Image 1 (cartoon, one colour):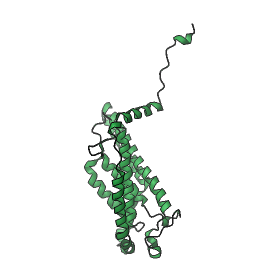
Image 2 (cartoon, rainbow, N blue to C red):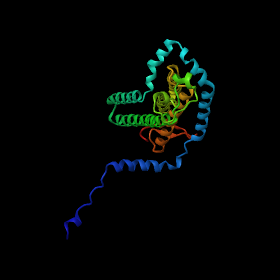
Image 3 (cartoon, rainbow, N blue to C red):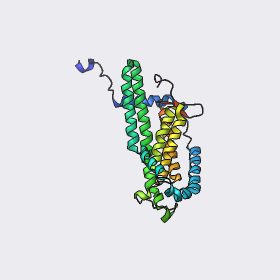
Length: 261
């Protein structure tokens, strides 16, 4: 008899497939709870807000931007770069590192769940902001709207699609998009502080108008786009039972325990 016939079967190979296998099982187990992302109502509301800003506020504020107090403009210039993609990602990584360091004082079991939570939350925020950033930069380049410094020369309606110049990349605001995605993600993770995050997001978005590089409609569109990506990413995470579950009204809410996630 061949020795190969009596050898025990080789253990299954575990690796990347085991991760995808677990995610697939999570997805399949929650398939009955899946709901469609309510993009139609959100898009309709956002388009109307952007249109109102465009037709009502852009021209007056575009003309008045040069007359704002120098101290206000200087202050806005000092804080507006919080909305840069690099700044947000650095802040997210810093929070992750601090969070992981704080878990060293917990018990082994608590530390395990806390580490899992911090990693998942970091991945969620990063995906929300990065995906929104990719979308907004494509739109800015394709639309080619003139920025407020060109208001006297071309007004608010001038477009030069695919121009690529900084002065023709006004709509939507990338800073506002990053800010919208970041603070909406935080509001979904920590709903108790959602009003604080909403206020911070709005004020940081407005700094783009104060420093004179965007119109109100640019900022409104950017914030709406960022918020949308944060919500859409949360919906996707909820379908795998990661970080979020769906409330009765279909909105993503933080899961109550990590032990069940």
